[in-house]
Image (cartoon, rainbow, N blue to C red; front, side):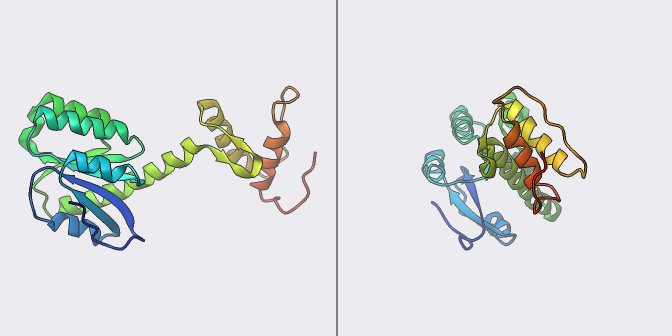
Length: 204
């Protein structure tokens, strides 16, 4: 069942432990490093827990490579693509090609059990990296430039937003060319307001 181990101010993490183990040792160690660990025992509970919440990181603990569990894990990953998933398993389970394919296609990383102190430390570090990548992906896919009324998630728009940031960091005149109505004024204001001259008038 769901167990919140630290305050709601911490980073939320969904821990799906399908092993039936009652041990919370690993969850408690993770919680000590700034996470609120919400632990569930089944994939059905995981779906119910994930639906109303914004988990950027999740752990799935599998020690038996059963077809039903692999399908359930794949479904959970597919329904929660904004979450970076880590998988915990036993080394012997990696002999199963279906599990390896699932890890390769859907997981940020995996760890084999048991974990020694160095392994736990590495896991905690990886969780932090995964959270950062999920946060960055969320920011990019939202594609918001609210101050300039520009939105977009296509590759061309993301490339444009990246270009605006790069140009704004350079202390030099900028020439913006394009057909009438293509948004040159919006881009000029976006560059200006992100530059070192943001507090000064925009020169056209």
